[in-house]
Image (cartoon, rainbow, N blue to C red; front, side, top):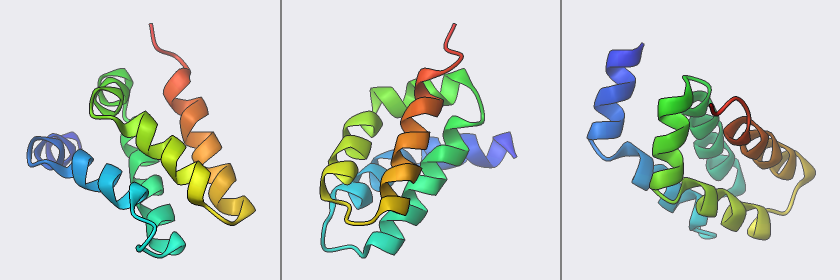
Length: 89
Protein backbone atom coordinates (compact mmCIF):
# COMPACT_ATOMS: atom_id res chain seq x y z
CA UNK A 1 0.00 0.00 0.00
CA UNK A 2 2.14 2.85 1.27
CA UNK A 3 5.28 1.65 -0.50
CA UNK A 4 3.50 1.81 -3.86
CA UNK A 5 2.04 5.20 -2.96
CA UNK A 6 5.46 6.62 -2.06
CA UNK A 7 6.93 5.24 -5.30
CA UNK A 8 4.06 6.73 -7.30
CA UNK A 9 4.55 10.16 -5.74
CA UNK A 10 8.35 10.07 -5.97
CA UNK A 11 8.00 9.03 -9.62
CA UNK A 12 6.10 12.23 -10.41
CA UNK A 13 2.56 10.88 -10.29
CA UNK A 14 0.93 13.84 -8.53
CA UNK A 15 1.87 16.50 -11.10
CA UNK A 16 0.61 14.22 -13.87
CA UNK A 17 -2.76 13.81 -12.13
CA UNK A 18 -2.98 17.57 -11.55
CA UNK A 19 -2.29 18.18 -15.24
CA UNK A 20 -5.01 15.71 -16.26
CA UNK A 21 -7.50 17.62 -14.09
CA UNK A 22 -6.64 20.87 -15.87
CA UNK A 23 -6.97 19.55 -19.43
CA UNK A 24 -10.43 20.13 -20.86
CA UNK A 25 -9.44 17.96 -23.83
CA UNK A 26 -9.48 14.94 -21.50
CA UNK A 27 -12.97 13.50 -21.02
CA UNK A 28 -14.77 14.47 -17.84
CA UNK A 29 -15.04 10.79 -16.96
CA UNK A 30 -11.26 10.36 -17.13
CA UNK A 31 -10.72 13.57 -15.18
CA UNK A 32 -13.09 12.26 -12.51
CA UNK A 33 -10.97 9.10 -12.28
CA UNK A 34 -7.91 11.29 -11.74
CA UNK A 35 -9.84 13.16 -9.06
CA UNK A 36 -10.75 9.87 -7.38
CA UNK A 37 -7.06 8.92 -7.40
CA UNK A 38 -6.23 12.20 -5.64
CA UNK A 39 -9.00 11.47 -3.13
CA UNK A 40 -7.52 8.06 -2.40
CA UNK A 41 -4.07 9.58 -1.94
CA UNK A 42 -5.47 12.29 0.37
CA UNK A 43 -7.21 9.63 2.45
CA UNK A 44 -3.82 8.05 3.19
CA UNK A 45 -3.04 10.79 5.71
CA UNK A 46 -1.82 14.27 6.49
CA UNK A 47 1.57 13.83 4.80
CA UNK A 48 -0.09 12.99 1.50
CA UNK A 49 -2.56 15.86 1.80
CA UNK A 50 0.39 18.18 2.30
CA UNK A 51 2.10 16.80 -0.82
CA UNK A 52 -1.06 17.40 -2.85
CA UNK A 53 -1.16 20.99 -1.62
CA UNK A 54 2.52 21.60 -2.31
CA UNK A 55 2.20 20.33 -5.88
CA UNK A 56 -0.71 22.65 -6.81
CA UNK A 57 -3.24 19.87 -6.41
CA UNK A 58 -5.77 22.18 -4.78
CA UNK A 59 -5.52 24.64 -7.65
CA UNK A 60 -5.96 21.78 -10.11
CA UNK A 61 -9.13 20.68 -8.29
CA UNK A 62 -10.45 24.25 -8.42
CA UNK A 63 -9.65 24.41 -12.15
CA UNK A 64 -11.54 21.14 -12.58
CA UNK A 65 -14.58 22.52 -10.76
CA UNK A 66 -14.56 25.56 -13.02
CA UNK A 67 -14.66 23.43 -16.19
CA UNK A 68 -16.67 20.38 -15.06
CA UNK A 69 -20.16 20.11 -16.47
CA UNK A 70 -21.92 17.55 -14.28
CA UNK A 71 -23.14 17.55 -10.70
CA UNK A 72 -21.37 14.26 -9.85
CA UNK A 73 -18.09 15.81 -10.97
CA UNK A 74 -18.66 18.87 -8.80
CA UNK A 75 -19.61 16.70 -5.82
CA UNK A 76 -16.50 14.54 -6.18
CA UNK A 77 -14.30 17.63 -6.32
CA UNK A 78 -16.09 19.21 -3.35
CA UNK A 79 -15.60 16.03 -1.35
CA UNK A 80 -11.89 16.04 -2.09
CA UNK A 81 -11.54 19.66 -0.99
CA UNK A 82 -13.35 18.82 2.26
CA UNK A 83 -11.02 15.84 2.79
CA UNK A 84 -7.97 18.02 2.16
CA UNK A 85 -9.19 20.55 4.74
CA UNK A 86 -10.05 18.07 7.49
CA UNK A 87 -7.85 16.71 10.25
CA UNK A 88 -4.70 18.64 9.45
CA UNK A 89 -3.00 19.05 12.81
